[in-house]
Length: 102
Image (tube, rainbow, N blue to C red; front, side):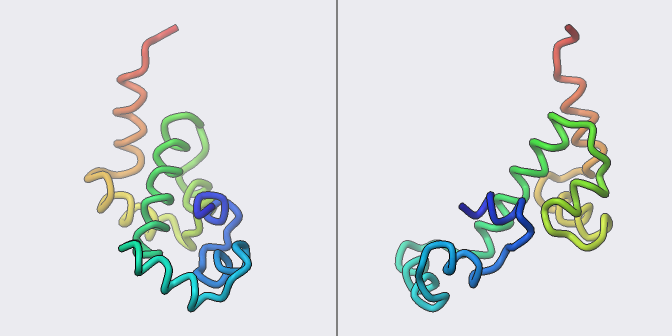
């Protein structure tokens, strides 16, 4: 569900709670009980979606940043560097090098 909200651009505890038909406080309490951090889950989804878009599409980095909720490509590039240890462009280049040529 978080991945869907990420792509829809509504990444908030309130939006997730609304989609689940509960209050933000109740959702937060239930997540905490299971040892889940909402922000960490959002960031994990953002990384997975960004990685897939970089590997499987030719979308510009700026467009990927916008699609997963970053207001600037620079903010996305910094976050992606923290997640993957390299820039989005380097990640895409490495992924392309691993693809077999058809």
